[in-house]
Every structure is written in C-alpha cells, then in structure tokens.
Length: 93
Image 1 (cartoon, rainbow, N blue to C red):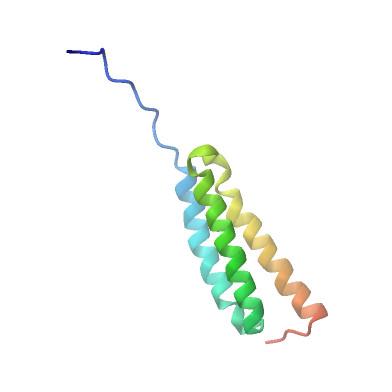
Image 2 (tube, rainbow, N blue to C red):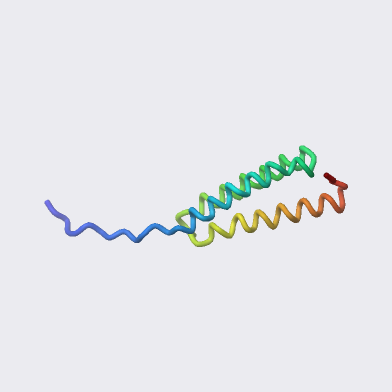
C-alpha cells in the first residue's frame, strides 16, 4: 500500500541553535554575577535566566527566528540589574 511520495521537509533553521548558544554564554555571565552582586541578587538573576531559557525552548519551533533575541534581552536585563544595583544598592567589586 503506497500513499504517495514522502513529504518534503523544510530545512532546519539555524536560528534556534544560535539563540541557545547565546543562552549558554549568558548563563556564565549570570552565574558570575556574585563577583559584584550579593547572593540573593544572584539567585534572582538565575531564576530570571531560567525563565528566559523556558521562553527560548517554547519558541524553538513556534518562532525560531526570535530565539536569538532572547539572549540579547537577557544581556540588557543583566546590564541594567548590575548598573542599578551598583548605583542604588551599593554593590561594588
């Protein structure tokens, strides 16, 4: 019993892989935040990173071209948190 030719699959998009590589790099940035921030802030930042990772995983198939934007947003949030913590909360090296 034949059902016809096999459907042609579109090629896999490289963008989710780029985004996940960015998320891996971003993890080390967030994990090393203890050099400037107190422990509670590092925990909050790592929870934020985990939430960003969940969004990246959810968007892997739904919006593959948007996944690389997630580490960019995460880097901006990290920079804002470190800058605000240094300016208003007195976090120093």
